[in-house]
Image (cartoon, helix red, strand yellow):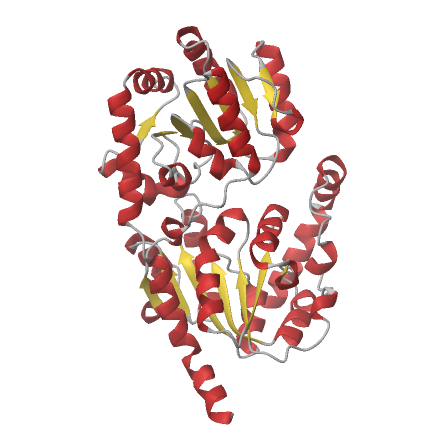
Length: 433
């Protein structure tokens, strides 16, 4: 099975090679870390590790943030271990390097034996911790054969991916047996994991690590914007984060209505993908809406327009400036994005009705009247209602913060489960000294 899988993976990469090359040339994507993805170890890993190693894999920014607390706790509880972190995306890589140090971070290898073996040979991990659902067959097979214990934390099966997992359940069951522990976010995720072949006795529910993510230290732009807004008496402020194609026109038309009633209103608009910054800029020009690009702004007066975020890594803190937050990928069928970041600041939240990727979080917030879920036609009306009703707007934000606070604790539960996986190795190390 693994030979066939590897052959199909290689064919798929060859067939799609023109797309990857085009992305590299047009957007500068994917070339970063290419050597590491192909099994070329960075120089800092060129010697076999003398210390026991814990390898944590987090695909992108969201997963890095989610497991950050677990990594901090692992470092504190296992100071004798070397902890390394791999990511798949360049944005996740930058955040991981900033949080944990460049010497500990690298790109996850492609799922070929020749790319994986060098890392296993040099790192010799005792424990591999995988965030959410990264079921790479060759990696799991080789990691298991190396003697590493393997845990999947914050595990979830989204509504979008669920049919595909079920379709390949028979093939997946053999892959999933290589994993020692599954820590699911919810009972529904646990049920789905068992249904696709995860051994029932290895599946536990520990909650969602994203509820435990502490706000990052605000970047300097936050203080600069707050001062500019106060000086010009800007308001109200709408923060639209992680927006996607076909969504910005809907948001901007609604914002034009806001400007008619509140000439000093500002929209902070943060498209999800960097390659779309220029496209959104052209849309703003076409609509005739005054705007400022964050990368070019040098403290000029702001009022009555759009502040376009064309940089990476600042959105989470920008939510703190909002009177209302909209979390994107949800007015069009893209599955939505995480609503926890604005909730951390007690900002009232609006999302569209396509939130499949965060179904349980959104349902929880809905059950406590802590989020507004709307369709494209309803969005302008609900937005204006919240902006015109200070009491209801503040109450909605307060309920969001309270709901978030009520769900914390997954980090400590996850750590306790991981400690049990490490117990045999830890005891053996202690007995041999």
